[in-house]
Picture 1 (cartoon, rainbow, N blue to C red):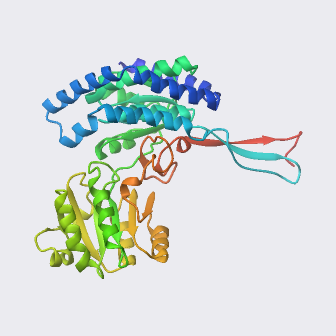
Picture 2: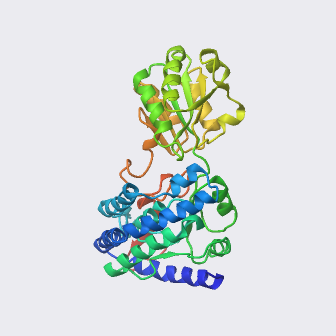
Picture 3: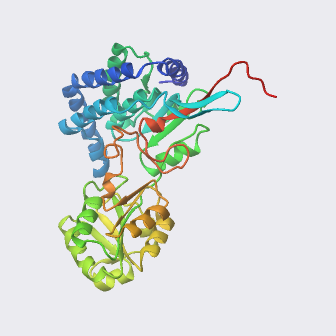
Length: 417
């Protein structure tokens, strides 16, 4: 795809976004269902092509974590379809009256939710992002330009073409969904320059990709760099529950951004809790690193360094720190955390509320696994990622987070005095 074609695609997306903003909820939901049906019809072809791309990536020496993110199987494919269907069942995020009043002189003022416009989605590895992003954008009335990694280009094009066919058959504008089909960086560079046509960019992938996108464009970017997620086991925690939550937070899927990376243990319960945690993590093949106080109890683990507290491992590795209480845990999290997801295990409502109020993160969980922070368990249907920004969206980015608002005013010849 040459530069002129990228520009032409963006222009078509702008036109489509205007038309899409006028569509009814029922039409957009119908399109989402037909997109899922179209994908269902090409499942075997998608899985075959994906297997070829996974093998090619393996031969190229890609990491195990990257290969896992790249791989589709029947279960993952059915999950992708279910996300499209679930997002069709969520409430319409558009045309909601967010606030309003009539002033003393009878001027009616209100604001209502509207689409952002054109969304550019730039991502690596995960073909499921192709379907999630298209689903979230169609639900929220936004046109989308997809740009996946070259390692999944053929898979992504198959997915996109099927969804385009389903959406158009349902009655949506032809260019509501588009995909950049050329490998390489030239097309991405041009996309980053199209601030006259693209309203927001959402990069999803490694820190390097996200940093490159954010620093290389004038277009607003919804992003998160790291998922340095913490769980604090308070002095009154139910230890059986705490161990289960820590293991699930770390081990359920180690290569994702809401996996646990640093475990904080209150010093009052450390002597009992740490051996239980060590045994549980050993069964899962997780290597531990600890502060000096942790190593006084778990003598066989490595000493954690300053770098460990700053690290998103995305690997079978966990750092542990013994802290002197709730305030120390909060201080550690706010200093070293990435503002993504952090949790506490406690039986005290007062401690839970203090933690929730003072920890500056997009998601704060009480007595729940960090792995639950995301669109599905938050009732968003599908999401396009997690944002650790505070403007415009924060936390899971679903259909509602891809809306903005406009002010609407009704008068009867009202003049400014």
